[in-house]
Amino acid sequence: LNSKYKTQNEQSITLPEQISSPERKSPETYDRNPQLTYKFLMDHIVSQIPHKWYEFGSALAITPPQMEEIKENHPSNENRAFADVIQIWQTEKTRPFTWETLMMVLESTTVNEPQLVPTIK
Image 1 (cartoon, rainbow, N blue to C red):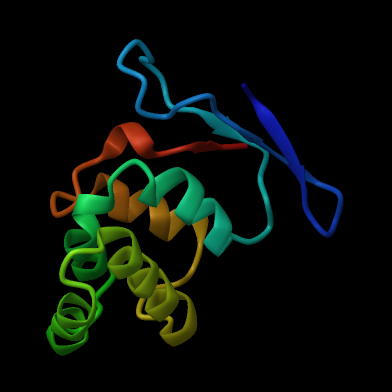
Image 2 (cartoon, rainbow, N blue to C red; image 1 turned 120 degrees about the horizontal axis):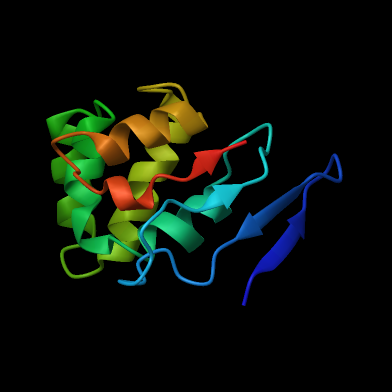
């Protein structure tokens, strides 16, 4: 089911049925939300690649000591570890917290998940 969410500015984001569906050949399209959100990342990126939290954080230039601390704090909870990575990215601005950075990270050789790159209108 495609869903539409309204933002504070009454713009909408169209969410895909499943980004990782094997029959999909092209990236999903999202109406441009002025700002990337934690909720979007958790719902549509983390849910698809929870096992790549360390790679994602490394691609965002989160320091190795920070990454190791996350690993120690959440040794068996990849979703929580990924949430911590996103929180550090959002608050410490290791890279700009933008759609462009998200696309760059997903396409990087470190993360290598280009099929998750949304095409931004």
